[in-house]
Image (cartoon, rainbow, N blue to C red; front, side, top):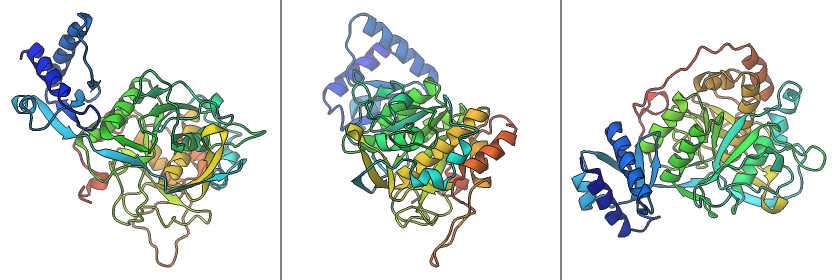
Length: 403
């Protein structure tokens, strides 16, 4: 294969396309060809050739670039590359309003996190939060942050221009007991990965690059409070790579109030899918529910940190997911040998039963996360090593993937 010609055709194609709206995810069918392509690409860069609008995920051996599926390039290399559309995603929050400092929010108390702090505060557990960024100056989370990465602008810090990411970070790891709020795991470390813009929108390629960064930077778990309706082969492949490397991914199920369907990537079996409850430990009306939900957590009227040092109340399965991530951080600080499948089992085994309305029923035995019981049980749990889920693109419980 002539890699110089391959790259030349790719550059010609990218010059004709919108670098944002027309990206495709192109996975090499043979990993050896991917590495050969990168060797040639590095030679060209060393000789001063500029390579604009092209990114790579080493974990899944993919190029991300603006290429038409009907172009000469795509047709010529159809036996080399698997092309996939770059689908949009949205964060999972349904409302927001300004609030005052909550101290210890009700959700943190409801999952019994404060009672676990005498044993674990999530000390030095690194959590990759793929979201809209964070407010680095917020007094409640500024000591719980690392530099992270801005995938929208690599030359800038992952600053939050939306608020959602700061809200998630606060619920997980806020640590201002005297003047501000406390999160579930106040000594955990947030690694902000800015993949979403000011509208709370991103593309699958941004999430792929975000997970790739998290795995390469050895985070202990990943929080993904967003979703989409469409299945992506490339996204599932990289979720599986993270899973096999021992990193649990906590994903929000969506806010459509559905009983038999949840959003991707929460629908993949390698994730821990989260539904939302309210202050009465009932499933929130907006939350997806049913057979695909692994665990529930408080997600209705959650007050947390916001941009410009403020606080907002938000509702959504996004908010529920951050409670679960915090609880897992408490657990991993005491037993970091646990594998993702074992963590999911422990979450379900130690959960608190839900209070169901008359018109509700559970399709499986899922409850609300209980951080105290999780920690007690987890400290007794002996890891049996990795529990691999193969990259066969099966969804939760091997059920059909059609929505």
